Amino acid sequence: MWFLADLHIHSHYSVATSKAMEPESLHRWAQLKGITVVGTGDCIHPGWLAELQEKLQPAEPGLYELQSDLAKTVDATVPKSCRAKVRFLLSAEISSIYKKNGRTRKVHNLVFLPDMETARRLQAALARIGNIQSDGRPILGLDAKELLKIVKETSDAAVLVPAHAWTPHFSVLGAKSGFDSLEECFEELTPLVPAIETGLSSDPAMNWRLSSLDGLRLISNSDAHSPVKLMREANLFDTDLSYSSIISAITEPDSPSFLGTLEFFPEEGKYHYDGHRACSVRMAPEDTRKNLGRCPQCNSKVTVGVMHRVEELADHPAGRRPDQARSFNSIIPLIEIIAEVERVGVNSKKVSTIYLDLLSRLGNEYHVLMESEIKNIRQAGSVLLGEAISRMRTGQIRIYPGYDGEFGTIRVFDREEREQLSGQLGLF
Image (cartoon, helix red, strand yellow):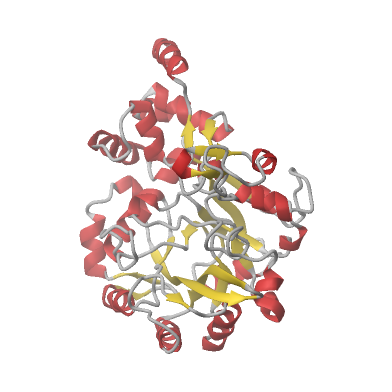
């Protein structure tokens, strides 16, 4: 069975998340997006796990679905063209802040768990170490290696994956507080780490430059803090719908069941380039080196971004592709494309109306972005929208890379070109 999975999100118990991050909204938006399996996120938080136990029911082995009565009500708000089954897989992100080898380390890790009982046992184990109630993503003074040991002791079926592995401040390979290799972080337990999450600011091609990552699965997830952000990155599987089948596809490097990923254009990620946001200074790695790591405006140290960090650790030039590499496609969220075409904000009512109308005519967002014929998009939306999606598929876009916590900007058209195309395509 072919399906999409987005396994790293957050609940309304996490800091800076939407109140709509609840099971009902996730069930609805997963259908709109085309996602079959969505991670619960935050399942270590007692309040969120209790809510999951109340609102979900067992489905296939190790997976859960929204309670039938709740699902019936929510499905009535989903266009018929998008209605599909949605399953939940227990997941959480855990922040480890600790000292190792003379430096303060800040590493975020994902955990995937096979059932509610395992989640409760891991909750109890981590509650003895620190506060797991103040934030959906608990912050613990726990060595990442020790966290890995606890996770595997809780259940051999549980899996730990370094989250957004390259971001500067909170990741295993980050420039600010990470390590130069997984082995430096996890030591003799490194073989128990089967994958890394590439994060919004990197894509598989960047990771292929490191031979040390060749044996790892490269997964991608949205890290959504609101339902509309689901599927900005996701994983493609072709396997049975069960926890064990999904985990096997992730943990077995030769598994044909993991097909690849959907990716943000990494330049849109907020840590792709180097820079200093306070001075609005964006810098390519070579410029940072020329300036000795300093902001040319104020002489402060710049935040070294993901592209720079990859170049520091890479042992291969750009363009290398390992034998076991899986394909990927870079996408722009449909709402962002509509907003650019209509020249309005992404949160405007006009964008929302067009988005839902398009989905009701053509199907879920994945289908519109990746599969629908351009002529059908022109008919259901507009000729300019069809051209924009065609350009996204072929990578004909303009990118202003993100830096120092500032998201990058992607444009399909410039102003003059847009006016010309509007007239030409209108005549067409």
